[in-house]
Length: 164
Image (cartoon, rainbow, N blue to C red; front, side):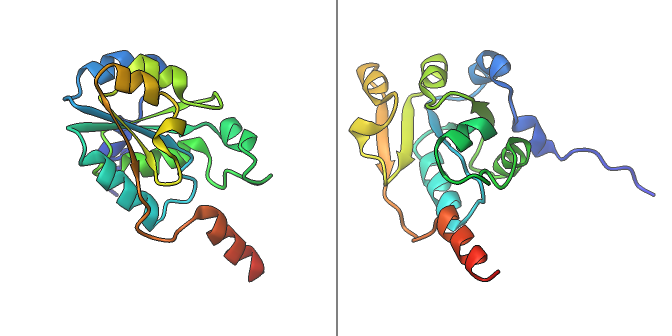
């Protein structure tokens, strides 16, 4: 019987305490985005590929389970725990590093990482993107990428629940 080990993509998962060293090894310009990414769908992967195309490497920061719950998405959210969401995110070729944050916003993480490019989805105006003022002041870029697909984890869950 062959023995199996964790896939290589698991090495992209980085605890916040180890970020400084791991970020230093990534090529620039560095893209940063964040979110729950609870049930990954076509909208997510399209957005992530578009975001990654804006730089040489991309860091994705995930909300912890407690942080997701505080967003008011529903009592049963997230559906997938952080460890599972991080592994799925790390498996994507567009993603170079995955970390997480427990605060309500990723502001402190953005200040620590100092990304060259800050990206959120089209439901965020640039002036509302946390950290945009600071990234722009350093000469970086901030992008709000328009949605190409009408997809939503919340809508998917509504559909599933309606069929029960």
